[in-house]
Length: 296
Length: 294
Image (cartoon, rainbow over the protein chains, first blue to last red):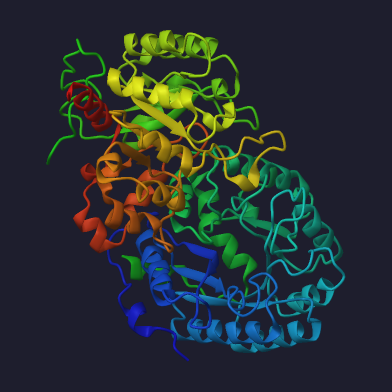
């Protein structure tokens, strides 16, 4: 399998990280594969790693959503496409375990396949489960997925549309209320609510999850509204927020730089940069001292 | 190190180098900032004294400042009065960019007032006013701005489409509107486009002649960086000289333009020092030169 080692060898960076010197984990990353309709997939992946190195990302926790629309829809991937994507992702993480960890992504409509993939992913060393938007988060079909995720101590990264007021094309998007219902009935599972800045009304999400302690949130997305991080800190506190980038590392760097101008303490910022990720991803092998030494 | 071109908003103002934005000030002038509240969500403390502190902190010499509530009002006059009054104590850093609504009576007086106030640009909000591509009033204003040596600033969106309030039905300003303004025959107007992504920018830029292209400037704060690398692509195709620094304060985090430039791929970054990107003072100079060219 081609995991593009040539491009990856060029991405080491010994300059001072733009995002600061302390450890940093991106728990919401994606890569592309040769099985998509992008001919520039190696360049895309190399750019992610190079920009991550420049910012100071020590570990990208990443998934691949099927064929990214090439042979089945991104948010409704076929079982065959998802297996291919997961295989590629597992190999990619294996090839660079210092920088990349894998989610196993599943489509819960194919429940038996999803469970099988999670079992396989756990055996291959994946650290979390990725759910996109093939089924609403509160659907009964997600119960088995959530339970097996808890069994393997895998947090579930759930794609979220912040305040879904209608159906949007190409996905059965969930919002925070949908996820809150699932999380309330699956208290042993940790859910990572995706991309607070990723579209929709983030202000609706914050009160929706406040009293659901097994939901934590990532700050990724292209949205950089002033007030978003401050309100998130106000509603759920730094212990339930994880810095992340998703599709735009530029807005990720902006949010990192903005954190120091919020009410967050230095300890809070370290929680959001990496400590919370280490806590909610128990299977992630991450040694901050080693990473810091590498950065230095 | 090369300095930025000197900015002199007032013809009578010598712009001493010790002033923020003066000849010795290497920091860019942001072209897209506002004061005041936003009707669809809370924006924290959108006051001019806070803006001055943020600009200083984030490495801007100053900003073109609009009045955010006025974008959603019908009559721009009270909004412009509020803008001039609010910025009166901060004119070294904050340069008023009032609204001129060209389908409103006596808009020519409003334009003259903006010039008298030393405004580097005037702002229009075609989507909020329902003025579509090729609207005669917009064309008239664009021509007048060119003749008077003042830039026209168009905000194509305030928020991402996915998050808009149900009452916010204005939509984005389409590329057709921008092309129509840039293509006006015998126009000398400088057009500043704020809030565009790669697609809108390219649909505009590559739909213009080289002469027309040179009169359009794109605030790059909404363009995506890595891993899609849209900004890197545009730097190499459209050119950094057409791309303008901005803060988008108080709506967005002011660090974004700097983050985008810092994250350009190394080979692109090495060929693109900060000063190659445009800023408010460079557009002012272009507008003045364009006015003087007969």
